[in-house]
Structure formats: structure tokens, C-alpha cells
Image (cartoon, rainbow, N blue to C red; front, top):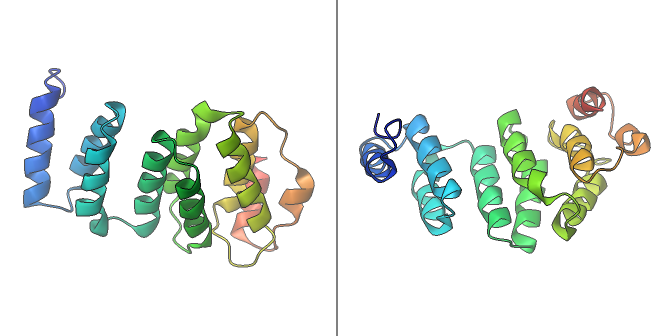
Length: 169
């Protein structure tokens, strides 16, 4: 209610209290995380993730850490986080959507090219995350490059990763 009235500070305090009482309150976590990220309060977002993160699915936790690292302008941290995500067997499309959303404003940046190369080199491997192929296609779109059908065809089939990549194509 406070947030709807524009009382951001009061809303943050109320959400923090709620999360101390119930650390699994996902809506509270999600809202507070978004508020911190929107205000570029990355240290507070990091602290929130560390305190509440154990109650999140691993892929969701990685995606949030990825968002923070990208927004802070880090170069290596997003790469190592993305490798963990691609190797994860957790199927959480929303986590990869967070990765995609945090990269949208970075089309043409060196980071997006590095991450795109990392994802592309992971695709032919067995056991990649089911969302990795679709992430490749979406990242190519962000980089304003046509997805390479040969890369998509290199994804081992039959697999969900290959199917989702073709669907995104």
C-alpha cells in the first residue's frame, strides 16, 4: 500500500521487516530487490540476495547475482555466473528472462559479445540447461545479429534445449 502511495522509503522498511519475519516471502523479496535495483542500490540488493537467497531456487539466485554484476559494470563475474546457469539442470525460464532483460540495454557492448561467445561455445555440449539455446537466440537479437542456424543445429538432439532454440528462432 505504501508503495502504491509513492512512499518508497516506508515500503522498503515494511518489506525488510516482513522478510525478517518470513524470509521465504517471495513477493516481498522480489519487490524489494526491484526497488534496490531501480535505485541502483547494489550493495543493498547484494545483501538482500545473501540473506534471502538461500530460500530461492539456485537458478533464480544466480540470475539475480548476474543482474547485479551487469549493472555494476563487472566483466568477469557475469561470465562465471552464466556458466553456472548454463550447466544447471534447474528449469526456470524466468531466470534466463532476467539475464536477457539485464542485457537488453547493452547491445553492441563488449560484454554482450563475450557472453554470446560463451553461450555459443556451450551449446554443442551434452547436459546444457534447457534454456541455453533460447538464450543464445535472444542474445543474438540483442546484439542485432541474425542467429546462426548452424549453431542452433549443433545443439545435441533430441533435447529440450534444441527445441526451445528452434522455437525462439
